[in-house]
Image 1 (cartoon, rainbow, N blue to C red):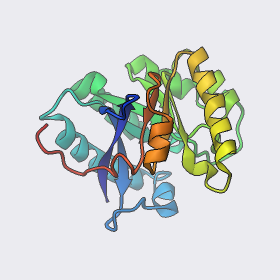
Image 2: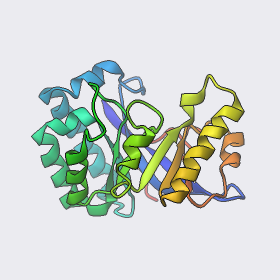
Image 3: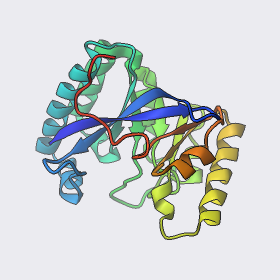
Image 4: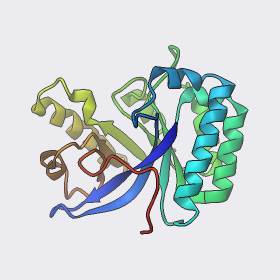
Length: 226
């Protein structure tokens, strides 16, 4: 397994794009997301040890030479049960400071109440990490879950892939609803799944929207000099 870094961009009305941040994404030897077996491995100490090793190596490559980059790493809720994860987070916070931020994923192992993860999220914030909620509308990252955490979250992300079986108008309605929410609560709004120029152009020119997707690049494992 290895990581790639996919750009998240600010896109102007004239389609001039500027990289804002990157998301670190795990890949298998075929260049794909490893799938359910990988996610299950993160419920074990061995799996988290492997994740830490790969993440440490990738962050060193991405940030040692270019400290101006900012990278979001995905954190699964199940990983927060392991003290080794917290030690790793303390390590990268000490080394990279604000150049690493956290995305909390939508996956949950069990049914839970809204106060689930309250302590862990507060712990992340106390450590100084900027926090994003990944894949709103999916899994457990619901409106109610996010509303409860407005004081500690600065960014939300909506994937257009959720609406691949819906028509365009329905997809846009969901985007507009979350955009209105983001505006009201002064959140940065990342739209994932930008796969073509039509979609990129549709959301260009809005200062609170950032774009991410294959249209702008699948990501890179190694950075060239910028």
